[in-house]
Image 1 (cartoon, rainbow, N blue to C red):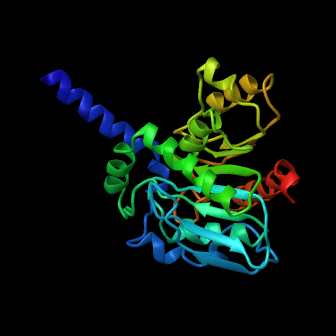
Image 2: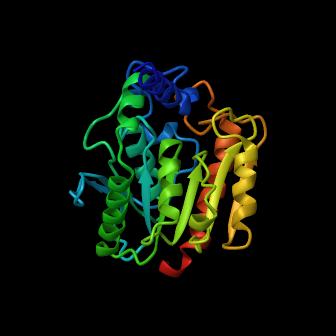
Length: 269
């Protein structure tokens, strides 16, 4: 019994640590401070955007699409451990203004967190197989909307899921991982044949730069990958709501992301 209790306690502690730097200065309602796209550390695009919330099968998502544009590249946007909140919706909207059909998926079935305890509980209850079914359905939905190519893009917990989807049998055409946990299984990594962008901070205490560099090296022989390491940046440095936010690094990372998406999904332009 003591061993079981110890294991449960340890698992809970690891979950709390996994995104700890995003929770050090959590506002009472993080949705309020980050609901405006102007708060996000990347430039506005030129496209007007239309919004709707489709039921894409496993859940109801948030779909941002450039007005009057058909058959544009798709992006599966995967939320942090907070869930599909206003911050992620604002991110989807702003990204869509650059000419992408962006589906922000919901891995929590409508739930969102406003405390680290809630976030740990929600992220800890997610089933890996269910995540893959969700992302596959999201990719299929974007294809139905005319996106012949699709990238997955996640932050922190979402970065973990983007990493998982990168080697799935129905993997996307490009993968973006913002400080997600790197995969180490060589068999899984060998399945990845699409471009991968990895974004990490050199001062990340959750995902070490050594782990990120190891993934970078592992992918060198299998795919075209670009890994960016931002000096003095900590975990979750691109999230404006936390103490770890690094505006300069976040801005540079976002510009690299837009460049990567343009190059990787150009066949659907």
